[in-house]
Length: 250
Image (cartoon, rainbow, N blue to C red; front, side):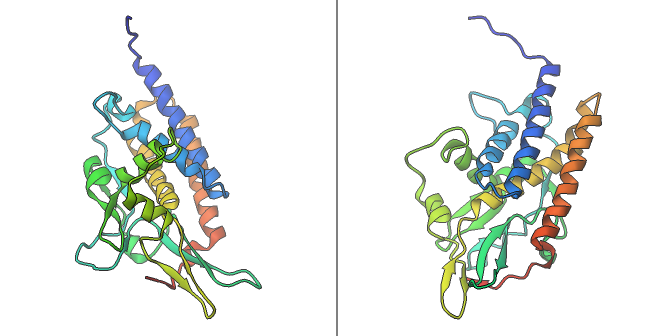
């Protein structure tokens, strides 16, 4: 069967669609639907993941050489404790309830260790920079998280079997962080969905800076990016992330 070659203009339509998908899902995630992390992972996969059988959209647009925003704190392999470089811990308490803890995406805010945001090449951002180390020394990078959620956890496919180390990270608290109260101690929960949200935030910023030059008419996309930036400011203020103080322990 003969093949049709997709034009450059059609590829740009796809890119515009993916930007809208990414921003819309990010906003939906922030309003409480954690399942959007699966769609965020799938969009990131479409944008950046090359295989032997398919090319990432940014590869087809000759844009894989752009620098990617890296908001993670520096991974220190000499640290014997578990490492959480991409998300932050948040404590919350409602009247009549015990203190609760969860992981959150810091977006543009966070601790001083994250203030020196950097831009790096794709290979370092995707494959080489560790974002989690669990209690057993298992390491996870952005590629591990994105492909697990997109390929195995419902983004584009549901797999009946998962890698055990990944299952431990997402289901059995292998980061070993807990919230202690005078009455009890509780696990912090699954760090992967907020990590995916943070990765999506990095990609959105990267696309705005690195890909807008492809479009002859940038007005509508610039408006979409600006709406997203305003949303992030309001969202972080709403959840009080800029006043983040962690009392979780491993």
